[in-house]
Length: 445
Image (cartoon, rainbow, N blue to C red; front, top):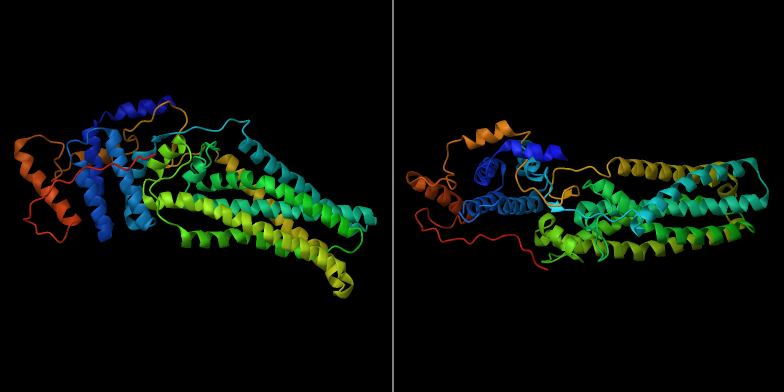
């Protein structure tokens, strides 16, 4: 970590110079922006040029709020693409701006996460055991037990897949909901701000408990049923498709019901982190909406599960009235359900490997958390962009807010008037410019 400190010292640029770099980068970005985004940029530039904005903390928070606003307006638009290519995200966020606090290794969340993938390993073993026993024609008691265990394994894998898919949707809606935790006792589960890795980890940890209970119920009921009638295992592929699709249903429901909020977070750690990571009302609303998403899923999944269990028992009970091929065909009764289970297993194993490989990966965005220092560094990270930074500093233009030379006052007024006209196009160029108070993103408890 000493490399970060050394690299920071090597830039040797004061806050006013770093402010000028940001001002000119934002000015360049206007050409690829919509009119609304141009107004947001102009307003931020006007605030940045205020002589009261002197610390890097103030400069970074104002710029970060602008980036959040632009992402809310046009997340994949040309303005953000331009700023990323020019290195603004790297400059602002390579040094994390929020202190991170990770849950200890013995925390219940960590335990649930480990046990979740342990269960995937057990299911991986039970699937070929089921196929072998069914294909070799083993005794009835062994067939019944292996069939019940296979059904329980399929339920377990389906439930975890639902959790992973649901939480990947949720991390893309509001990453801090998971990155910082969302209940009063929670902090960070993983250090990474990778949305997929966080979604996988939380999806497994959050669903492990309910999924284990459901798996036990299905295993017991299916085993008892299999002792008396052929088990309708051909239903399982339908179930394994339906359960993860509930996450898609929840995603559409959440999008249509998200409301803007002014406050979010259930403990001080989350509140402070959200004020930087999710500073806009829209993003705070997305934090709350993720709770609604989870509630939607946890009420719908059990209903679908009970419906599937009833279908397995009912169809097994009336097997004598159904086509015998559904129960006797190895392809329909054994191989096809097993193929779906294997696909789910491979998917979850791949997800686990991805999560493990990226568990400490830090991306250059406003969700980056600082776990290695006791304080954050607000200075821009410029080691990879020094040439570009000096090019911006040496540019001759109207942004002279950092200068105190009297002959530059008129140029400063011209720059202010250009931004003011952009923000308020209905005013005439010769109108006086009223003072605009410098507002920081709200930090409310």
